[in-house]
Image (tube, rainbow, N blue to C red; front, side, top):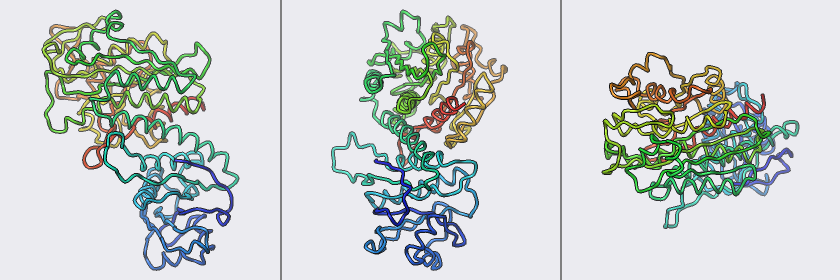
Length: 497
């Protein structure tokens, strides 16, 4: 979609539809007041009839506006709720409703005047960025594998109206929003692809395209022979049941001086997870193509950071494989040796994500990282504990965890911190190896992170469990692109600091 920032008076603009905000009790936003004057009280008359009450995310599209008189043919009223500074989530909810209405009515272009809403503790850069993110999310369609003619979303251009004095801030928000939205869309598209197409090799090829597109991005891929020489037996053990070779994808973005400590992002890249010998139930197993959402989000973040030319060094590591049952696959009771040298007893082959992550955490030490953040659809227990609203957060550095919480709050891509207490390590004890790969039914999300913490002792580290937030299920099934907004806000916060 084409976006632009416009500061000309509304009566000088030409547009198909203008989107303005209305509050409860027939109160109008500043731009709505201007449109109301131009249209001889059209909005106030509509509110007086009770056609729209102004409740948050309520919408009303007026299609019979005489365009020859006013310069536009449609007027979309969007409810904002009570006339007071909006919470950030309610602002985004109103934007989502506006975008959905534009999509449902197949509008080709629109002018959005919702940035004039007063949002609590948020500036024009943030408000503009959210407009882009929410409209891009609403207009995302996965059509790559559809052979039939489908009704494509027509919205192709969006003007964002802001006062002249806030034009520069809005332009910054537009650039941020477009880069982040493109990163989210990349993560969604990779995740929505089926496992027979998006294999570890395919994922590596897509990472390579980032290197072709951006001069500051370099891509390296370790194959199974390379990983074997490094002693990554934990990672390689997961792919033994698959005909698809495992890959360890490294994507380096160099936006700061050479030698500066990088932020390292590690994304779980299980392109399909059947559970191995500990086979998953068949119901909803198709959704296990989403077990690589962490890896997809890492690539989305690299793409966004490179588009914004962030002055930061960033490394993305994506361990990628499949987890399938086979005569050579891991068996419950097997003992493997990690790259770090710790032995691991495999009590459940469906707890494979931590096996590919633990060797990658060890590998990350070579970069002398400033911080390491891993993101993984790791445990169903996280979905049970937190639902689909926040991602789970655990880590060995409280400041890093606080920074991620703050970034999540700003981006409305929230996290909830769980404890990483030493007592939980007791649940991972094995009679036959240094560690067991599961800790039993209790505290499954925490014990999974405790397992990983054994391989992240040499640097500041945080773990994001995105099992409940990486995709939607049901009739709206599809990837969300989370936690790209959270991580990009974290990177923006670091560069701003």
